[in-house]
Length: 327
Figure 1: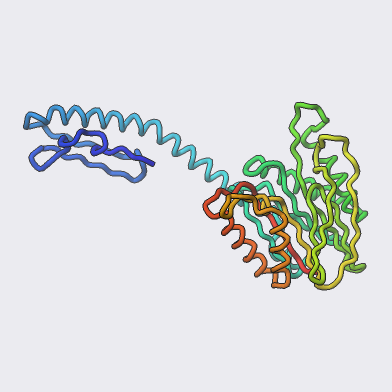
Figure 2 (figure 1 turned 135 degrees about the vertical axis):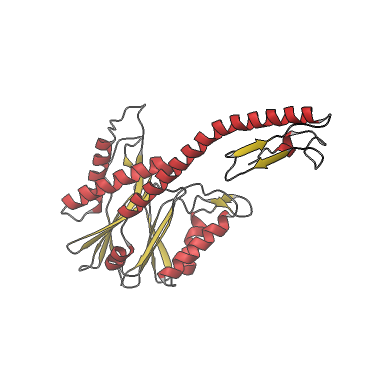
């Protein structure tokens, strides 16, 4: 920020010297805050011009103070509110202890674009089933955070009331609930907010994993090969075409299988020497390179890779990558 000072404002040669019986005291604790000018009586022929210029400067400075101070205060209040909202949002996410108890060895790379995020992860255990969700809501920042809190609330209601253990049925019901909450009826001019997500339900007794996805795939790495389970091409929310039931994928899992769930933020991030997207091909290759490492190391490598890729580029979206090992 460029800050005016008397030296910026006055012509050369008109600033106070030891012969000019004039002193200026400036006390800056923040830009354009507390400034005082102490002027003594002029004693030479150039002092009247200098006195008038300084009087104009002090008047101008006072006017700027009146404009900037409310903006500074308002910005500080908004920043404090966002920080507190971010604390509330993080409190709604599963704790590390809960995730470790349900999944064992796992990692979660969670990098909001702003203080609050439109991406979220969710987990719950019921009977012999463990439900894991990675979701990407419409937008980021405050709008995305509002959608994420709606998504968490709806998931809590739907999963607790569902007794089937079928992710496709949960997503169907979740879509209905989101549309009800947002009053989405299919009108052309209404908001098309919603979320993309992947949902896994682990059955520990049968060694099965069931998956349903809304525009969000699942990666399974087994014996050095990566398999992509495709999602349905529709969101949880109002769709541009008629809503169809979500599909259910049943997978027999084995010990040491690696499962990855994620939003599109990692692959879509711009960076590198040409300022291009990271893309899904390199993302898959990176996971293949690191999948045998422990989960903490995988987290650190993914984080370091995307930060290095971004460089001086702005982060364009929230980033979420989850991984866990079948034990």
